[in-house]
Length: 392
Image (tube, rainbow, N blue to C red; front, side):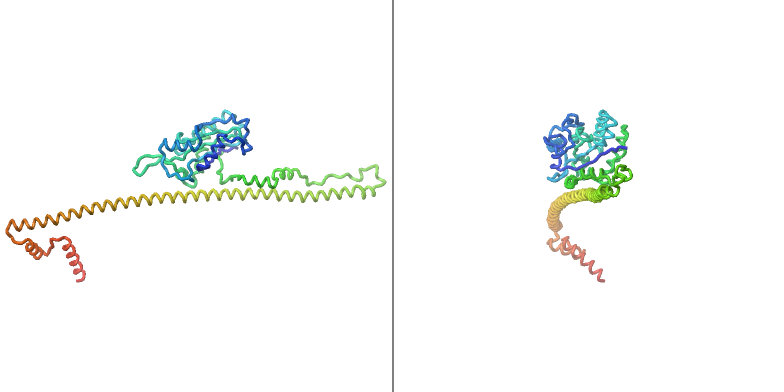
């Protein structure tokens, strides 16, 4: 059974430029030997980019007013690779192959409410060993800003939030594509299948791996048949001489060659095992490096997020302090005006009712009521009384 395969890769500006050159066949001398230039005219786009990926990104960011903190090493785009195997494509034919990729394109447009407008390019390659599509898009999340206003933000980390995000992608894609009539098994995650690193090819060249495997498969470890002395009718009379001078030396030579053949087989087996082990360790290395890169990106994103929050908190506290200072100044003005009004009122009372000096009136009031006109003195007086009550 064939598999529905969909994989995602995050791209920095540098990565995006490399993908553009490969996907749009901008290189004259292809390093990929699987590309057949005589079939490149069969390639087609579900959505064709007008500019380079970088220029398309800058244009979309400005046109759609996309938010998000973008640094020189930020992941600004993602690239999905969608395919299956040759058996599947050979079985369904060219027209159904085209429909497979067009349906896959629709799936990505609607996945996580991405939207077709954020697809940069979707190129289908039919000039390589296996048909496949490179779909490049901007990972935009639909969210709200601090004021609660709807906004679109570039954030690869949030678009692929969660350790099982790629597993969810595999599940959703398999469910969708099979609903469109394509008989496929669910694709296996890359961490289960492993990814082949180019350095393994160097090791294969160094050890002459492919030729070694052919030689190893063709080695015959069985002893060749030798003529039976009883079948040699013409030399029965010289049986002993023939056996000692002809047959035995040949048998010895055959045995010698057989032993050498065994040694060669053992050496070749070691060589093949070495490459197999190297491939295994390389898969583990790629997995670890991928985890480390993801962890490094998460740490950088967390640092950036907390730096932004730190700035917001600092700005809020500064605004609050400024507001309190303004409020405090107003209170000082009110208190000063209150003092001034009370003094005028006491003078007016004394004059109105011929009571005498205002200071004397104040002293009498404070003495009889045990209350100070000055609120500061009154507060201190009340605090001392509370302390006395506690001591008693």
